[in-house]
Image 1: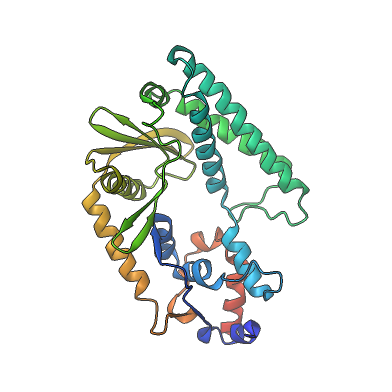
Image 2: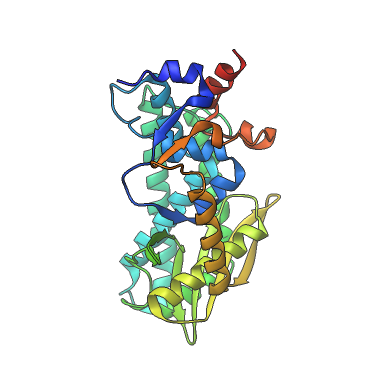
Length: 314
């Protein structure tokens, strides 16, 4: 059996075999690689086996970090799942009554799921606050409810819910869309949010609880355009993002470019694969930490990373 504690004590020699599962790509994986290669290594390689109750505590800590959510991610997942679930339920309601039913059911579904998640956290002895900030469950409930309600109020002040409901047909909106496509031999994962068909155009809508980053929004729009071209053989795609910029909710629209997405995917895959040594082995030392305080402070691998940092200093 491997002695991970001994290997941690010589962190530069820490290595692991490349997983036998296929190599896949997503924009999230790409951004994680760019922001911090150390976090990328811990997430995709070092966490292997951390789910096992007999795993070394260091590997278990890495795995817990992999499964942790940032607060904005958690809110975004709740919102995305709620929209898709409720759109599926209201699509056969006559259009004049559909908008009112949609908002009412959306709020009911969203806040029920949020309450359920917070209650589970409060009752769990293993409750871990979000890596980006710490809140006890009661305060988390109040903040999450406020932030979700604020996002919904803004979303329904725009034309997008009406457009989605107007163009909604059983096979024209992504009720159960397959979020994977292939770029050569590489499986590409993409969650375009809510998307629908308008005359001559595929449109997508996402609510983001992160501070807007135009370069990321544009990359998402490009990936959506590539996704639409690959799966539906259509060229025109537009992506809209609703996000709070310094606390003020706004809408951001981007036209996607599928060719640019292909260039991004190809270049990103090449960078990631260059880190895999002969024999399908990846080495800790090949993945330096970013060293940016703003990124490290909110990193889900803070505890695990400190093991390696302390080992390097000994």
